Image (cartoon, rainbow, N blue to C red):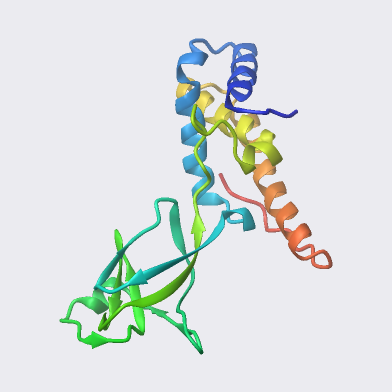
Length: 202
């Protein structure tokens, strides 16, 4: 089972769904794929979902990268580099001073404390979202490496939509595919340590 692009995935999704007696599949396929991607972004955390970016900051806040899903590490560049510490948003309620930032928080933007007194280069290593499939983005790393996860995940959404009694079978296959992705990630990152994650609850 392999799909070169989202069009082939939609064809396979329609074939599987039609065999299950579902109708009007083609019109809803993009929606089910998008819902699967939203769920996978919440549940998966593998190396392909890591990105690094550098920015120059000079004000109290910085915009989040468009594919941002969480901070892995954050530092101010220099010799030596200085790690920024996370603080909860409520810790920033009081007026902020100015100086070299030592901490940050994340809401719909990143906020620094103290407010930078001049320009600093920062390096953000963050968890990124899975690129969404579309006409402009016909494939991504997850579809290329784990097409079964896409198929079973989208089918799960289709069966939920139709309230089909067979959805648990597909949900189980989907859960197994997600666990296999994380096991594959551990195997390639740490060849001598194969600690599989405990089973998921759905």
